[in-house]
Length: 106
Image (cartoon, rainbow, N blue to C red; front, side, top):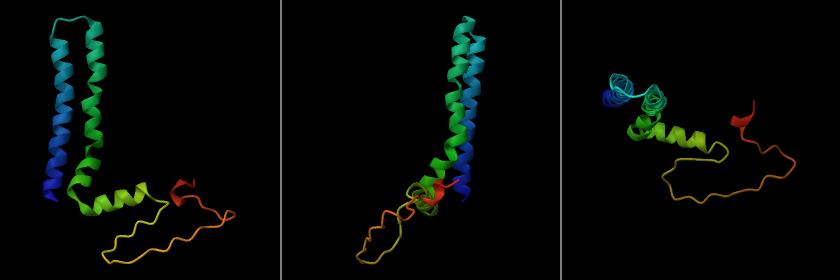
């Protein structure tokens, strides 16, 4: 758990610092305001990494999170984690029954 938190904090730090340094360096250079505006616009890309890094770190570090994320992605399908050698029987649902994914209902 400590390693996961450390990786998350380091990734957040580097992405936030990279964003701030890019903006700072472009403002120190003697370039036109249009170039600085473009640099500030593109500096948001490493900044956005700091907001999305948690998903990738948790997916990489934890088998439980991987399993939970996969279940969320395939909410309409059964995703049972079994280690036995059993055959699955698939039954077709009649057309008149509700076949929507429960997660998509509002």
